Length: 308
Image (cartoon, rainbow, N blue to C red; front, side, top):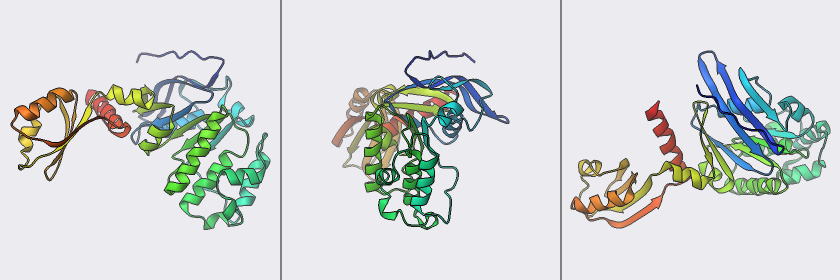
């Protein structure tokens, strides 16, 4: 395996260099090198089993790498966490029961070396109205907001979020991300793993795509879309759809037919559209557009699987 060196700089918040982690025969993280800087909002994407959770565990010092280096703010993850520089909101682990939201958040603030006032933390997380409710009586979305309150109980420089908006309604999700934008505007680094790719597209300054423990792509959402190369083509046909004829179109990478509505992905949209007309098809409501982040993500990971 070819190793990659990522130079650590004075502004480095997170530094991974050739990090590996295996669980028995499974290589969860495979030579991962990356660098995060202050004020970035970074989305971590990847299919199930890509190594996202393992990467976050290594970053937070919950796991030790088999090889390579993980540094936060120039030191170990444990040093950064004990110094109150990292806040985390993870899927794993439950909340204390038989205490109120206020009592739990107060405990989190009391343990943080750079704590915010409790009422401020409750308000930022949108849980003031349920502050006197017992934690074990909360809905899933409310539990997520309490986890967020605990992750931001103090003045952290790095906030790590694992599927943070799972279970939240649309209004809560919008409020959550507005708060995260404020955190980044104040110079904090926000790293979040999500299955909501529209969130990554709208929120992240930078997108990291993991695949089988390796960094498959690193760039802005626009750069990730451009790297996928393909474009979307959609149109309606007045005549019955001949799927065999459509499958013979050049540069076709994906085909979906719903009644007489056709949706394609093509590596060369101009050539494909020209071939549609040359085949004697007469498309109506023809649209050609770039891939969204979700389609680009699928295209990149499928291409990588085909090469594996």
